[in-house]
Amino acid sequence: MRYGMIAGNGRFPMLALETARSQGHSVVVVAIEREASPDLQPLAESFHWVNIGQLGKLIDVFRREGVTEVMMTGQVKHVSLFSGLTPDWRLLKLLGSLPERNTAALIGGVQRVMHEEGIELVDSTSLLKPLLATEGVLTKRKPTKTEDNDIQYGRKLASLLATADIGQSVAISEKACVAAEAMEGTDAMLRRAATLVNGRPLCLVKASRGRAHLLFDVPVAGLTTVETMLETRTTALAVDAGRTLLLDKDEMLRRANEANLTIVAYPAYE
Image (tube, rainbow, N blue to C red):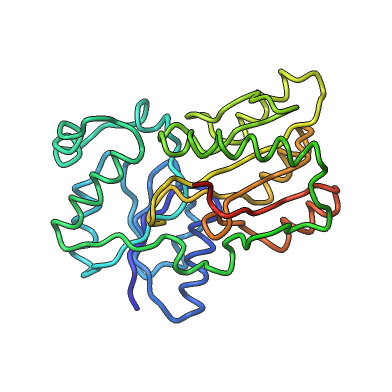
């Protein structure tokens, strides 16, 4: 199989690319400047840099390479959609047609334009199904009663936040929402929350959007998440089962167990 990949930041693109190669697939990578790692280049059959605003160039690359199935991997900082965006004519035309400039609307618009060019977005986790969180307690330690209360409260809020396309995570302490994620990302949100609770422990709850597909903006947690949890006295992490990627999963859980954290995956909140 020959895939196209739009690569953002983080470990997700590298893991997907390594897995594709191990399964005998070839991958044409279009890497977002100032987001993707240059370490991807040696593993790609073909590698191209594009600015975040160059929708036309991105489509031209995939058409020239004969790619018809593309997955989006990694993140693009939300602030880049404002401060780093210099749109070409294709993207400018798309932006003018959008009723809103949130992530779902923008990427949904890109998906529509690519479809018109014969290029389909496919499930971004298709090569990494083993790394999706499975339902249940994933660490040795179960949540305490206090943590469970915070988690259940946080799951309702995080689901609303994700569905509204604001963010994916909330920080909860004593059944109060201390901070909600917006453009700054989960780690920065946790650090902000830690400054507000005077040393009290936090619970981190991440939610996926209320949609059937995993084409883009899939919730991700990994070793960096665990290290930020330790830094901010966050003792519990709750995610959606089957809809959250746990990058470097084995090492992540080993580190969480070593630090006596708890990580739990629940069915996506309805």
